[in-house]
Length: 178
Image (tube, rainbow, N blue to C red; front, side):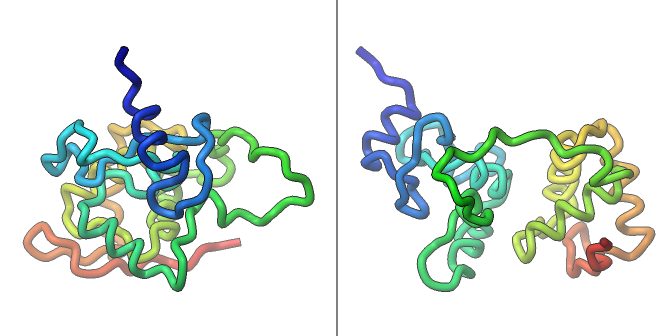
């Protein structure tokens, strides 16, 4: 009898998140590729771990080096993004994630800027990686991914990013408003 990959990973990890070592309920778990498939990673147990959906989304298409940088920048024990939300008085499970309301990001550019600010130093280093992230951020915020090319042009035109030889040398994002 074969088992599903997520069940195998959770069993092998003792039911804990691979990164923060906290108990991980199956309904909150997802499969993370240590080396993303877009970077040549394989779909085998040596390259897969179980972690929370929030962390999987944060890592997105980052390279293994970028993922390690995010982990190593933590002070002390690794803090999972799913657990960074303010604690509530009850022990009720967290509500299911809701799509971002367009009011939070009125324009595609605002949605992308907010997403880039949330990533802190874990931002793409190449235009190709940024283009993929921009498309993902647009879809997550209810915009069409086909707007990514225009948003990238605006990021460059408004000097929010500095690019040299298709590599992003600096992010100069405006501060969050409101």
